[in-house]
Each structure stands twice: as structure tokens, then as C-alpha cells.
Length: 275
Image (cartoon, rainbow, N blue to C red; front, side, top):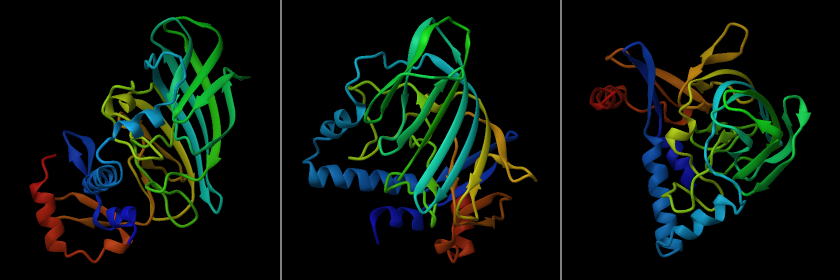
């Protein structure tokens, strides 16, 4: 099996409640880290920095996250042509500024970038996307940003007519900020994982999704078929999932291909997790 396929087969998500807040845990992360380490140590002699600098881009602009994401309205369509995403963001400036850098997967083709209803100038270099606001924005000012893009997602996180596997720390959504070149980064030759701090704003999300069924999402699904909720950890979106209810009263989400995993193992696994 391909590397990512192995990760999907052995990885699953647990969702429960702790002090009234939803929580989840993923077994797949460890497998992804193993694949990442094996690739670089086996193919690049452990010189991981080559991959880091290749993805950060060389835009001569501030890399700071100077905006707080307040709200996002997202439309996601996954199909034969890959994924098409339309994002409307409400952001608050934390300082006086002229523009903001975002992290966005380099494999997506940008169709449109707008700021407050007007087409915005932008520069893009690999994972880095700099958007010029067209004027000085004052601290505390609210900015409405619209981005539309499409294309094939990273091989490790596919999104197509067959499956959707979009991790919250994979930049399938644009997030303010960009890592510095001297930081340690979870990275492969084609994509970079964001830090948890970068996606930690408590955002009010609205997500309209069209694609493969049996979806796990860390937002609540309404009767109208729209996902909504406040998340301080981005959005997780995985298709082809089934549920198992453990003896501890939690729900485990796992891929259809791994649903024959013995219930005894799932209950023992749930019992040892520190939530």
C-alpha cells in the first residue's frame, strides 16, 4: 500500500467530551511522522533544511500573524477535478498594516483574491501568499477577505471524487502567518504542516460541503446540511468514516476499510488515551 494509504488504514479519530468541549485524537499523526522521517533520512541523508527552505518561499515581506480570524464562510466541492474552495474571511487587524501573509498549499490555483469587495494585489511563492490591502489598515479595523482556488490537493491529504482527507494543520485553508526559515517544520517536498498556534483563533465557521459521503468533521452538522461551529483548531474533514461507540461512552470515527477492527481493541485504546 502507498504510504498515506497505510496511515489512513491504521489511523482513526476519537471524539468525545471533556468539560463540555469536544475533543478528538488521531492515530494517523504518528504514522505520518514516521513516513516523513523515513523519507528525509532515507532520501536526503537527514538534511531536512533543504525541504524547509524550499517551501517557505522567498517573499521579502513580514511573516508575522498580525490578524485575528473572526469568522469564515467556506464552500468546498471535491470531485473529478480535485477540490474547489471558496472562502470568505472576516479578520481583525492587531496592528496598523498594509497587508498580510498567508500560508496556503502551493498546489492550488488561485482564481480570485478580494479585499473588502475589491480585487486585491497579491504575491505568491510556494506556500507563502502575500495579500496587499491597497491601503493602510488601522489596528482594530475589520477586513473582509475573499479567496477562491482549485486544484489537486497534496498526495498525503487527497480531496477528489473518491476520498477527502483534509487535516486541520495542512494548509488547505489560508491562514494568516508564515513560519520563519530557521524554525523546525513538519514538511515533505510538496506541503508543509502549520503550527497549532497558527490556527488557534476561535473562529466561527460555516462550511458547505459537496463530495464523498460518510464525513467526519469537527463542526456540527445542521438539518440543512451545513456544518457550523466555533473551533480553535481549524477544520478537520475526512470522508469514508464509520462510528463505533466505546464502553467509556465516547465515539470513535474510523475509516470504512478499518471498521472490522475488533471492538475489544477499540475499547482498550479508548481507555488508555489521556483526554
